[in-house]
Image (cartoon, rainbow, N blue to C red; front, side, top):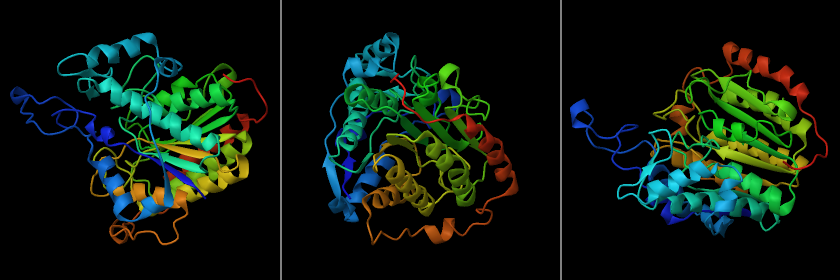
Length: 377
């Protein structure tokens, strides 16, 4: 098994400034300068753990390149791209669109590298140069909608990659799983009317965006039924997530029979994250990855590519990221997670009745998913 791994030091240079969590420093409001939630530490520390653990020796390094205007415009509007270009020319940079997603001067170049990096990782999988791939990229992308960036995201990296390989390599049916704790609204909106793209989002109910990600959001037109949302209650642990995977994700993918599986891989559903209230551990992510590998082997000759998204605890997120990358690469002697006995031993992590009730709402909706050869979107 060959696993592609894509990372570039410039991703750590994406500058979100001295924002304090979400907001700009402002002494009048008592907001002391500090750092944005979306800073480089979790990604940099994942990469360094991949290297120090020796996992890097099991990986095939892939090189990112910058996405072109044409590739970005396959997902985003000209107005959004112009906004990012204009902000990048300002002495202190700009914002991706929602006032909470800053970037520094020249920031578009790193945004292009993230989107182009995901294209390269996906292309390597589609062309068979690697069996699967993990793109450790920054800024993240799954909240970026066609007309605006938001939620720390500049461009829809994964959506751009999906459109790119569909256009250049004729990939027909693409299944996109998003396990970031926040709803994958941008990816969903991009493919809202597309029956060739199945989007599945496992997320904490109404955490962000608070007005999206409901079970009733199912796509429109020809795409009706191909948007699947599982808004899990706060406090959901491994039991709830694996139940959602086994009862929703796997059957949906089985029905859809994709040619390629893509994953928006956020680690902010971990038990320590400051922006969520879920309770996953590194073993949770390892188990979901192993299930994904089985699905990819069954339906698309193992073709699976992951795009890094959120995760905001620099102490614990690296162990979650490493677990996924180890699983992709088939590492037989994984690094021991020293925190697993603590976080994995907390009460209430098994499947709960109120979590089952949410999953029960979604299962019947999968009947509207069908496979078959269709023209590309």
